[in-house]
Image (tube, rainbow, N blue to C red; front, side, top):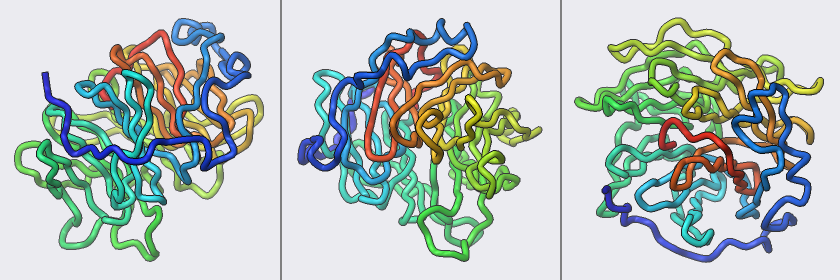
Amino acid sequence: MVAAPLWASVGRAASAEAGELSLGALSDSGGRIIAVDPRFKQLIDAGETITRHQTGSKWSEGPAWNAAGRYMVWSDVPNSRQWRWLEEDGHVSEFRHPTGSTNGSTFDHQGRMISCEQVGHRVVRHEGDGSITMLVDQVDGVSLNSPNDVVVHPDGSIWFTDPGYGVPKPLPQKEAIYRIDGQTGAIKRVDDSLVKPNGLCFSPDFKKLYVADTGPAKQEDKALHVFDVSADGELRNGRHFAAIKYNGLIAGPDGQQVDAHGNIWSSSGHSVEGINGVHVFSPEGDLLGVILLPETCANVCFGGSDRSRLFMTATTSMYSVSTKTQGAHGS
């Protein structure tokens, strides 16, 4: 079993004092989990409780589950801080500060955290001894924009998006998706067809890559896209997968995860109460159901000992809810 990383620093405990929202179960949880398709009932019970574990952040993002340590880490990007939730007792405390305004993070197969530093313009790996390895900060001698989200492939390669959020214009690079070779460390731009590639995740068999495009000017054009992943690490056949629409309302995606059955659990936000939260799609792109949150949701992650708890980072807060499925991958 991989030992838990040693770089974590436990600081001040989280509380509700920093915001107006209270911690604990949402009293109206039952009305926030809505099946659009009967298949949704196989994934989550309508009566499940949605819990707010922390609040007071400025923009919550980048949830990542550490299986060995049994904890979930997420970012408050503008405040350059990461938080940690412990499964053992539900305790929330400061994990790292400052973080280079880390956005998305994931853990590799050795339990090392890989993070996208927005203002650092780089992707880094946190080693078990507390040191930091810089994986990439430029392409062809030119700085990256602001790395956003990151995933790891079984072949050891690291895939990340590089849109232009939180940094001055003009951007140094065309916004794109990149792949870092797991053996050589070579960096390659694998797609630059999307306006602002954002959250990304692999299908259960790693043969598809789902990417959120948050760049189009019109809300209705912001959507999830899917690419085929070739055996040689290329992206092919990029196409529209799904848009975030429900009950006559339109929102945008940001980050997403897949469950073991290939369903896509996508964040939904930058709209209004009644659509912000999580939208769940079948592998074919059918909307199965929604989990409505009182805040814009930026990203999601499956975690818990059996990977059945869905964690949701939403503006000022971090929420979770139990499901009847499991995450296909770690984070």
